[in-house]
Image 1 (cartoon, one colour):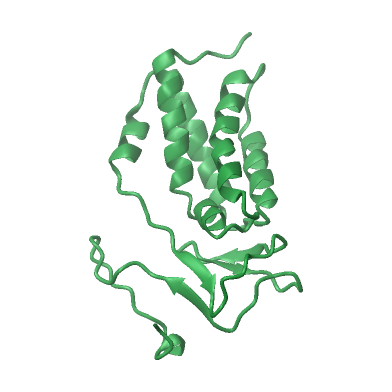
Image 2 (cartoon, rainbow, N blue to C red; image 1 turned 90 degrees about the vertical axis):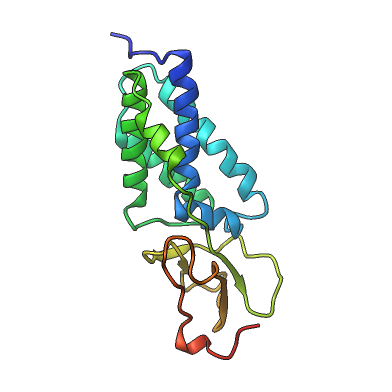
Length: 188
C-alpha cells in the first residue's frame, strides 16, 4: 500500500509549517546565529526544512518519528551541538502531527503558528573579542531560555565573561529582564 499523498495546497502549508516550527526552535536558532557550525551555518540550516519536507513527501514506506529524530539530531551534530533537552523529540512530534493534519486537509496548526508571535533569539558573544567561533565547539546543556553552554573541551569557547545581548526590559509580554549580580557594573 502506497502512503497517502499531499495535495498541492497541503504541500505548501506543510512547507510553511516546517519553516515556522524550525524558526521557533531556540536551540537551532542560537546555533545558527552564533555560527556554532562554522560560517556557513545559516546556509546549511536553510537546507534542513527542504530535507524534512522531502523526507515526508518522498518516503516510499511508512514514516517513523525515530527517523525524523535521528535526522534532526544528525543535523544538530553537524552544527557541533549535542541536544539533550528533549527539544528534538518535541520538534519531531510537532512536525509529525502537522504532517498528519496536512494529509487530512487540516491546516489549523500552521495557522496558529503564523498567528503566534515569534520568539527572539539571544546573541552570545565573547567579551572583548570579535574572533570567529571555533567549529569544534559544542553544547552540553540548555537552560529553559534556550541559551547554551559550551562543553569543557580544549577547542571550545571559554570565557569568564560572556555577554548576552538581551531583549529590551519590559518587553511586550510583560516580562522584565533582570541582569545577574555578577555582571553588575560590567555592562557597556
